[in-house]
Length: 95
Length: 468
Image (cartoon, rainbow over the protein chains, first blue to last red):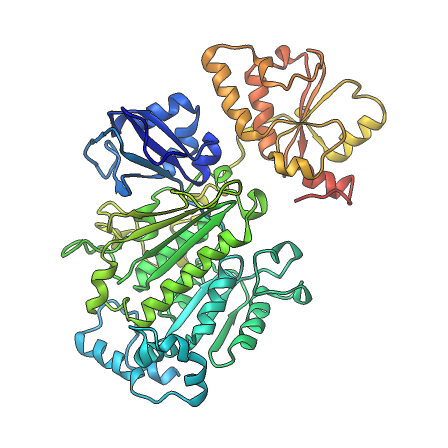
């Protein structure tokens, strides 16, 4: 598992239920990609992941929380750049 | 001990500077007993702790909600450190399947209330603290009166509805909340509402987030499996519980929860710690991740703008919001529309098999591979639910043949299909999916749900079945 994505790509980390859904911990996707297109891009690869996982998850870019554009929080759209690390973090409830 | 708290609640959100200072002095002026010196010496000599920190622990009150995989290790280290008042709330009893991870219980205490079992263990470890048992579940009705008697709250629970309830009550009471969760090989930890800010206040922020600021919506019920359904490794959940103890101890010892303390700067950057344990690989670059979280959200239901008008302690007691509805617990399963002819009890299925009526039928078991590997009905083929749904969606999108979803085990296109899962919910959805994909040949082929899943199989047919 490389810690740097290949040239022209960014990494997506899938935690908890996101990892179960995709059967991956990490993968590289082509950069740049507007944050507003992230969910649609992932939906194209993993059917049903938006409703099943993404809508309840929080998203970070380079270890910092981001509000998604178009939600009630009205986050600004940002560009996910080459070399960035995006993480999908669903809530975990058990203990 | 109670008198030390008589002149002000440590966790209060509006303590004046004076009260705050007198609170800090209050506990730190007495002498430690010889036993306390001996018992706590190794932690008191750690820089930053000292006798003052130790006395703040002794005067502190921590509530541990949940005496399970998180609560056991958290309670052990909190008791060991000498926190003076330790409340534990849990309505469950100790079961054999708890013990690989819930190490504050014991084989000899199976069947005992978890709260009593854990306190037995803690008293043996350290008899000095006051232990307060709450041997019943936390509910919207009892939450506020219980939480109000403590300075720091630990969420060691196992379901989304209780997590939202605890966070809401902590916002309303101004209590710092140390929240952790763990399932399978993942763990999460975050300190919330610390130092507490009054509900609805956004000025002079950022203020610390609550659970809803981080996770606005609960996961859909099938995506939030319990440890009983999805599995859990002891060290994974244990590490999260230990981290909770560590956070709670520092909050009390350094008085980080008091609004005016200079230490608050340390908590201005809320951080979510993620632990990802890889059963098949050594520690790697993604094992620990510390993620910078945002502060209080303007739009947060519980603590954001105008939240005073929609979330109150009285309202929670009266059932608003309804946490079970919010978390989808009362929702009917997607396959709730199955007709009685499409459903069969485990007992009736077995009887039909024995009469030879099901010759050549296909039995699909949609449990996870690990469950299937522990035991199955003879002849069952395993098609795990998650993968099945994804494949169904792909077939629909790409216009493939519906039959591609079935395992290639050479069953005829007329053969009846029976679907079984763990407890009988997923199987109903799968029957619906199979019909959507046209596998029922316009009603000519029987597709049946086995009611109640493998749990019902164990209860009705085979008591020796290794149901997990």
